[in-house]
Length: 77
Image (tube, rainbow, N blue to C red; front, side, top):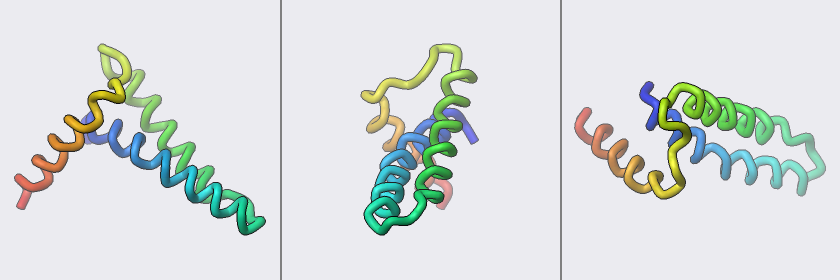
């Protein structure tokens, strides 16, 4: 998996982790899944930060990277 895909996966998992944790908190449950998702997304983002020579991608790069990833996925079919 390339760094762009890992970055996008990490970025898109953060809101899911927050929603999952908030839902668990509202239902008086332990936010286990939200914590796992948050740790996973933080791990992915940290890996990209360490492996990419230029450092972390900017938030402005997310739309362009998303379109590039969608184009790659469409090229597979």
